[in-house]
Length: 166
Image (tube, rainbow, N blue to C red; front, side):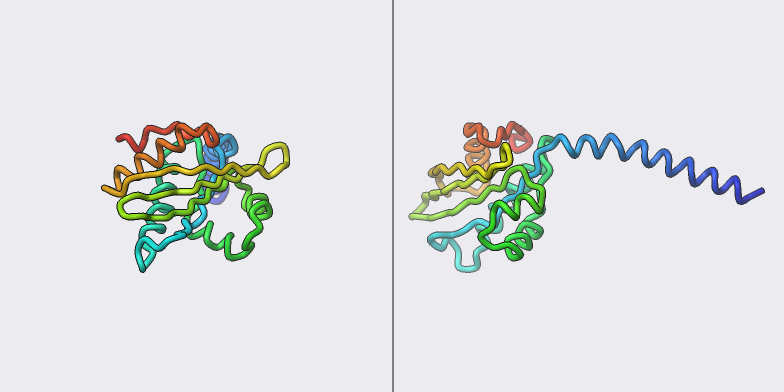
């Protein structure tokens, strides 16, 4: 008698878990899947390269704060890049990314020049958009705010989160 009771309890719990899981899976499918490649320094900012890692992690974190996006962790993006070097389209298809963002930086005195490259797959075709922006290096917080503002003004990724403003 105890066994059927335990079995029905387990089945009830599993059924409840499935009911909770289905809406979250549907929600995950509606979000854009984004990856941010490691930032390339064209002209070394710091000898130990901590700045490029900081930019990649902070941009990833800001996308994670926004419910419109599902973002690959920086370590995962690095592994994909090592596995498929210089094969952007194949990386995006296998990792199931809708967008892949790459930044290249160059510092001159207290100014930072960033070359943005946004890869996206639309109508089964790889599209590439490139643009540049200039920023002051007075503070890292101000720089991150400016980078998010660039993403907001460039309608390429439709980044609309105000999480960074909090």
